Image (cartoon, rainbow, N blue to C red):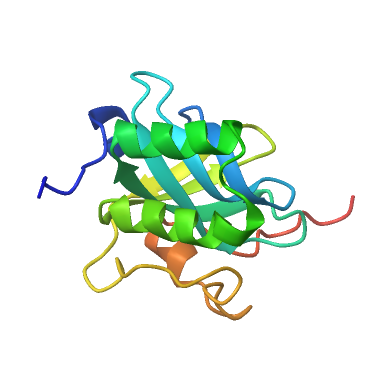
Length: 163
């Protein structure tokens, strides 16, 4: 049994202002990725990107977890997808296997999808690194701001006063 994968040094050190990781494949997409295989722009390492929360009204600022994927696991899934072997009847099993192959959630990251930049990034606090449930059950209630607060961000941005 091989050791659980860890994020590459680049993804583990994401900081505000950095470019967002490349999306190699999005499993769900709603004005941007919800769950996706991300690829490090610097070294090509794979990670599993999973949505935890988003800020209305535009939903362009989103908080995700990042968990490492072994290159061979991510590439196998993408090869199977490209050759059509991830049929609808097998898609959930393939996705479950990929999620099971991922490492622990090592990073919380807020992405500004409109500007393709990292807004904030941090390691999950103890007790807040549990695996998220299936989408959309994992999204918190509207008033729950914990993921944004953990990153030092406001969930509902203040609106500027009219001139």
